[in-house]
Length: 346
Image (cartoon, rainbow, N blue to C red; front, side, top):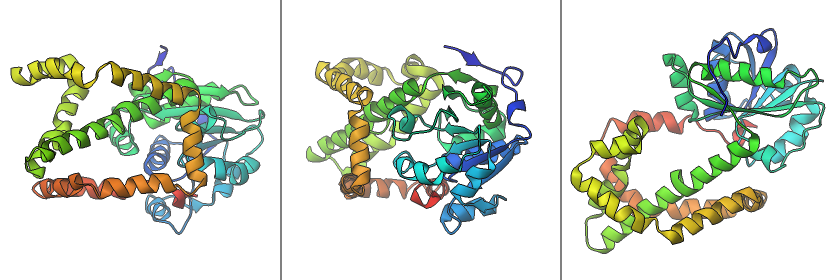
């Protein structure tokens, strides 16, 4: 694995005296625009002016342009729009307006990996994917630490400088401070999707709900079930984040450690491993991408139904009761809800 560290290996020079456009001012887009501007680069933002994110963009000191205007003004066009809207927006509102020799930058490789957009060979295609949400990317930049980023080149530009632009972009985000990790669009997309589905957003949340239901069905109070199966996840996750799995085990009780060894392999058994392999196969062969695209074209009806089902689950009312005991969570929740990306970024 090739890891680039330090501004001497990733100078900002390729982006100096050039214009960088960030399309979308949501979670990631806002962090990219702010960090690059604070690194001394010339940044313009494309977003719908009358949206919540458009107002946030103006409050941050940017003039809000249309996607077409921002694209036409830039040498590097960073796509900060959600994956599901890119196939509908880029062909009509971005690609026809690219400057000759421009480079298109992606924050996630999904649309390129699954060929949902067709960018002509005259333009570069690069990626810089921070390994964390936009709020964290911004916070680490302000603290001077930076956040690791993957970078990749799918297609060089006319001047042969796509890789240098990717490194400069990553450095402008603060990523060169801790490491810019060279990858491919396929590796970034497939591992990111698998991690989200198998652990972070799919497997973990399904396990939390199943464990909550098991306790409630056995007669335990829902609030207690929530605390044990959901609320305390962060405490253990923080230990893993800071110390690794072995370090986490050293920090928990001997009872918890023994229980982990005894129960873990029973929960994640051979059947679960077979399911994990099947999930990865569907990611790699495009089955998942086709399913997501079909749902998007159909108005996201399936996703919306799942979202409504989740919001109506008893775990939500139990969680609300528990969180009401923790007033310090209010500020963090408000900050997250006001910094999202979506169709209003178009």
